[in-house]
Length: 159
Ligand code: THU
Picture 1 (tube, rainbow, N blue to C red):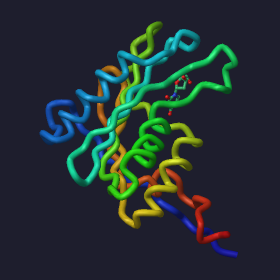
Picture 2: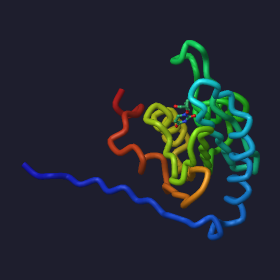
Picture 3: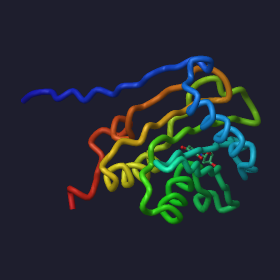
């Protein structure tokens, strides 16, 4: 028997250290976040996805009275990009979360289902998607790829 370690690498930034393109993406994610439809959780999430031609696709979470029928911001963003810009490469995704009931002062990572959905496109395009995530305040975290956030992911190579 041997133990296999699979490390995860995260880069942490202060808001004033962000590169200019990420500042812009963050602002787009925050603007989208404020338009979320989240009357049940009061937890607003915005996503801004930069494509290789410079297009930015934005989305936010959309809830439903039948709770499981709602959808996360990130999945809407990548699915919309997949639907509308099928030939483009997804480069960077910024996720921003804010609660209406408390201050979210730490980075909010994408949920497991969103990781699996984003992974599909990273595998399809065979190039990494940087995943940036933040709360309302505090540090900002960057993962160099989706796979880094979902070690041992299930993909088309297992089929
Ligand atoms: N949510 C997202 O939009 N993205 C995530 O990765 C985690 C959760 C949304 C879903 C729901 O509308 C609310 O946040 C609370 O879970």
